[in-house]
Length: 117
Picture 1 (cartoon, rainbow, N blue to C red):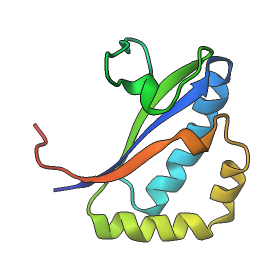
Picture 2 (picture 1 turned 90 degrees about the vertical axis):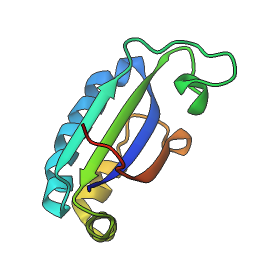
Picture 3 (picture 1 turned 180 degrees about the vertical axis):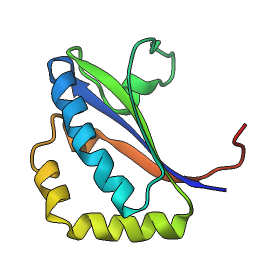
Picture 4 (picture 1 turned 45 degrees about the horizontal axis):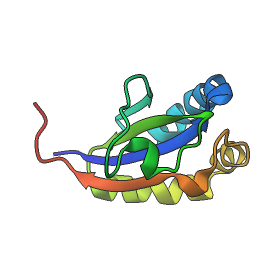
């Protein structure tokens, strides 16, 4: 089965187009490094929870929206190699220098797929 990196981040609402443009530029690089699929989702129906929720997870402020995204790879080994290549690639650094959100509040992690229906 494949391997998935998942991300949740708060993006200022006025930066929606800048975020989309950044993601559009990054997607071909992720694919070049081994990703098979990149999905970026802008919040549309994100409810406020009692104990926790997507907004709380990234400390989203009033003027921010939540982005939920994932990148699929054939395996963790390919993902790990891709991460090394990304860290060394000046094109990724250039994208990282102009992020339209506060990366300190991003949550992310790698996941083994246990069901793909």
